[in-house]
Length: 195
Image 1 (cartoon, helix red, strand yellow):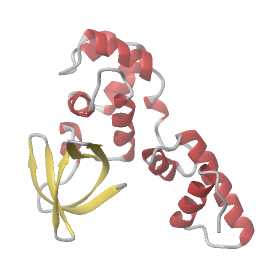
Image 2 (cartoon, helix red, strand yellow):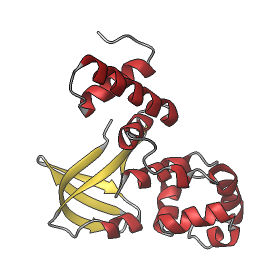
Image 3 (cartoon, rainbow, N blue to C red):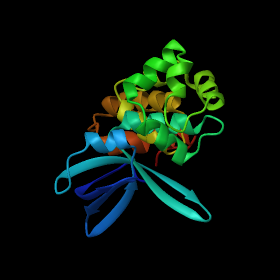
């Protein structure tokens, strides 16, 4: 639904920040590590978002980069880790340390992350080893593939659909804009035909 929000940071708090954009002030939950990467209140920033929606609750989560959001979404796939837990884990370890610990199978380092016990750390190792290091912009349309993945499409298939859409556009002589690429990729991923 939302890929990112650009606006003026009006304040930071223990669980995230407030951001003003177009007359609406958003309350966005962010990991502490991501808060530190964003500018201070009063300055403009871009926050990459993910909306958590259940019948009894809606919460907007934000991240300093697309890769950080992807890490969050990967953590949610681990049994026993929900949005709050993923946020706490990401706030207690840097991206580089998390990737290194997972690649090395460093269970001891993972167990030192606040809110992460031995069993959950073991599940993380099994589920995520080798995955986080590959999250950096896969292919020439990494950010667009990431946006499609955020909409529920398989990231690898999204990257392939974007590459095909770009080739089709070049062959047609039409300009290769992001909006047109996304539209054509969605049509292809949905199995429909472009009208």
